[in-house]
Amino acid sequence: MGRAEPAWTAELEAWLVPFLERLIYPAQRHWAPLYIAGLLAPGERKSLEPLASRMAPGHLQQLHHFLSTSRWDPAPLAEELVRHAQALVGGSEAVLVVDDTALVKKGEHSVGVAHQYCGQLGKQANCQSLVSLTLARAEVPVCVALRLFLPEAWAGNEARRRRALVPEGLAFREKWRIALDEIDRVRAAGATFGTVLADADYGRVAGFRHGLDERGLPWALTVLSTCTVYPADVQLRAPRRRDGQLRPERPSQQVQTVIAALPATDFHPVTWRQGTKGPLRADFAAVRVRVADGPAMSSRTQHLPGAERWLVCERRLNGERRYYLSNLPSHTPLDRLAAVIKARWVCEQAHQQMKEELGLDHLECRNWMALAHHALLTMIALCFLQHLRLGGKNQRRPQPAGAAAHPDTAAGASSHSGTLHGRLRPMSGMPAQLPLPTQSIGWAE
Image (cartoon, rainbow, N blue to C red):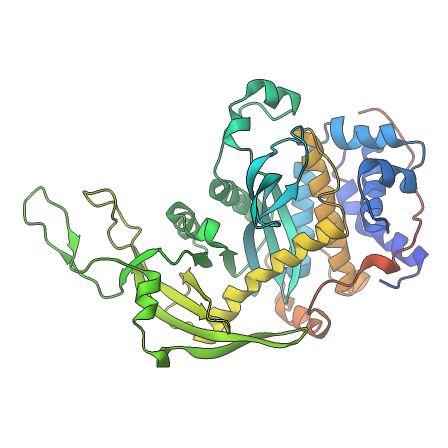
C-alpha cells in the first residue's frame, strides 16, 4: 500500500482495538493481532509454520494453540466485523452477495472435506466448501460470513465428527438454509443493504427465494434456463369437481422458451460499469412473469403460479444467455436491473484476495474450531485492507449494532469510485517485518 511501517502498524493496532475488547484473555489479545498482521504481511505461504517463523519465531506451538485449541468464541468478533463492514460499505446502495467458495485439499482429514463441486476448478474435486456472504458497495467487497458446509457423510459420522471437534447437535443443512441463517445473523448485527444477489445454486431453490421474501428483502438471483414460469396475466380456472383444484389457464414454460419468443426489439444494450479493458456491456431483455413456485398441484410435479417477478435475460457478445429472476419493483428500469444483477461479480474479487494474498486456503484446518478462527481472522484482515483502501483513519467510525446507515454512505463511496475498479492493490508494499503487538503475554484462558 506504500505506507510507512510505523503508520501502517499503528493504524492496524488502533483499528483492532474494538475487536480485541471482545476477547477475554490477554493471550488471545496478544495472538489475534499478530496472526492478522501475519496474514497481511508479505509471504508466499500463510500456513502456520511459515507465518510463525516470520511473525513469532520460536512460538509456533503457542500460535497453533491460539488457532486450533483455544476455545475463544468467534461470535463477538464476527459481530464486530459486521459493524466495521457496515461503516465501510453498508447502506441502501449496498448489495449482499450469497455464494460459496471452495478450499481445495489433497487429504481426507480437513474438517468437512469431501469430493464435491469446486467452483475454483469448475468440476468435482476434493475440497471444503464454505457458504459466504459479502457486503459490497461501489465495487468494494467485505466478506462478513464464511460458514463451513458439512456434507451428509460428515454430519452422520459420529467418530469423524468427534475427531474434527464438530459441535454436538450440528445437523446437516443445505447451503441455502445456511445462507438464510447467516443473513439473519449479519442483519441482527447491524448490516443494511439494498439487494441480495446469488448464483443459480441458490436462485433455483424456491425455498431460498421464499425465505428472502419472508424477510422482506429485495433480491436478484441467477436461475437455470429450465426454470418454469407463467405469463404475468395468467388466470386460474375453477375446478371441475367440488374437491378439485384451481388450475392455470395456460401451462408454465421454461424461461429459455419465454425469452426465445420475445421480439428482437425487446433486447437493449446496457453498459453497467467500466472494466480494465473498457466498458462492460451486453444486451438485456426483461419481462414480467409469475414463477411456477406456488403450491404443488395434484400431480406434485407442477406448481401453481407464485408471485409476479421480473424475468431478465442477458445476451452476451458470444451469444451465451443467462437468466435471472428478481422481486425488484415493477417500475424498475432495465439498466437498473442489469446493474444490480452484474454487481454479483464482486464476491469473486473478495474470495480471490482472501485466498491469494491473505492465505484463506493455505492452512489445513483439521478441526471445526481452527477453520472458524482462521476464516474469521482472514475476513478481518480483508476488512482492514478495505479500510485502508477507502482512506484509512479518515473513514467514519463503525456505528453501534442496529444503528441506521449514515445518510452520506452512498456519497462517500462514490467519491472513491475512480480508484475502485479492478483488483485490490497488491500488498507488495507491506512492511517485510511487523513488530510484535505491545500487549503483555498471558497464558491463562
